Length: 197
Image 1 (tube, helix red, strand yellow):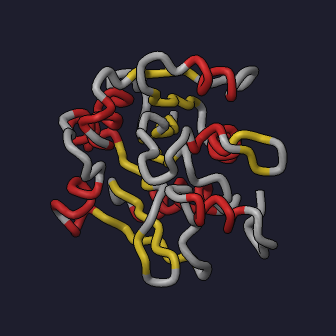
Image 2: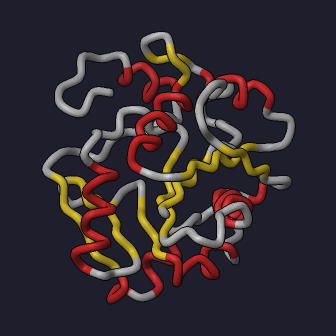
């Protein structure tokens, strides 16, 4: 069993408003991100801040569960820790994904899962034209480290701690953008090539 952990508890300070509810082709960004993950995993947990009825509504009808980060101001690490508390005991791996990465190419997540089977490495990290990015797969032996995260570095510290645990999976296209600023959002609406959702 593989669980998808979608981080959706950020404050969107650079956007100035709730970026995950902005629409792309009539659908909230968060819903694009979650729907891209759902076909490839058996369980999806979306980590939200408290009082996130609007985010929950954006995912209405999807088979997802929610975990609340009671202190989202503490940073991405705290959101990962909050999500890990909801991961079922039978999970063999988690894929930590961003709620604001709606144009993730469809082949990325299946390739991460296949690379785990092929390499036996506990961390599978995508590399897009030389740039390491997200989502990242972590096997169960690392769940304790993820659950202990805090601060804003997210899971990068776990990836960097012991390079021999990491399999870098190269993709021939650029890092799929996340949406942090109004300029990022504008770029989402530009004509796209391969990898469109």
